[in-house]
Length: 234
Length: 233
Image (cartoon, rainbow over all chains, first blue to last red; front, side, top):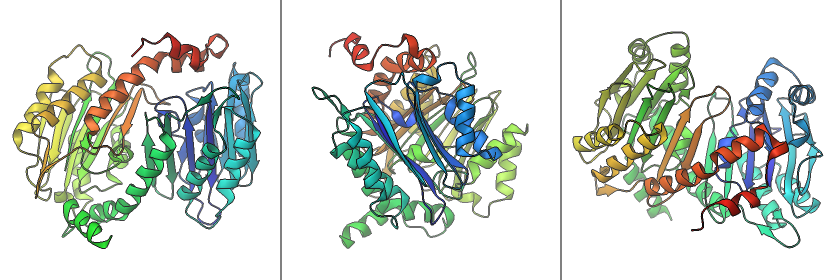
């Protein structure tokens, strides 16, 4: 049981993933973005090697569709996987195997895949797509988070009788650099999506400061001074 | 303001990194660790390109000392960095420039480096070393966590206005090429090292279940069934 949005920003080419689930430390399983190359996810009964295999195929130039075909050929338990792939052109594909449990499926469009399993219904993935598409000009991390929050608000994981909370969540966005632009995690929390929003809101205030002090250490203010200035501005 | 440890387990050759700091989401800036290659961690004033560049050089066979010289030659602000490097064989070196705020320093041990800046004093590094060496037979992730806990207990970080709490912390252990072995994070919490222990201990309960349900999904129980088998708390 998990729900996920893979997205590519058509304006900037940035690539990212937002994911929330009942399982813990989901970010461990979602280090699945490569700058200017693609974003993928293998979930449900995840094959732990799939994400890196797929990213290497995308790096060689295979399309999202060809990459998914290769993962199928390569995996004896393919029918247990739920997989999403977006390549650098924004071409996107999704697959939900027949052995995946609970309500499961995806909505796929240009530059995005909204998918999930163990969900209360189809309307959850539709809400995720809608949340992602609501503000197409906003930063990708904001759109991914909107997608995940919409999935939560649509009922998220569970059945008619039993709701399953989000215990972990993650937000990962790559731009042009070989390292992530945004890499935020909530590994164990009773309301992980709410907590991810809190972490993101706080992190956004520091993002530029953390970057600048590394690029221009000479004369950089201390973090305590930076925080005091933040407080004065509020 | 950060204290960290990077280490290689001599028995298993697993590579690991533990970090705790006042800054938030520190685990999101730790890409310099790769199975079978080595670890490079730059902190204080971070040159974000350093760690991946260092890994490329380690992969090509350069020694940590040679990698450090190269990083120094390519960076006009090398004096503002604190850098520790270990290769796949456990050779290690470290650099603490004059730029990082006091107290800053490092200890290079046999297969590990303890290092930090804006600390209460050198005894924080001594604590980290002692914590790491206390139970050498433990799994690497628990040795790294014990080191962070000992650093915290020795006084941790002290800035211009006194003690600074750990607001984020992370553990990463690499032993396979395509996915981390341990990857546990706390990004924003008033006691991030204590919270990191809670996350790690919980993850260890699920570790095998999560791995096996991916390897043999045809035999996997549901997570609900699995949770019911866990000890009641």
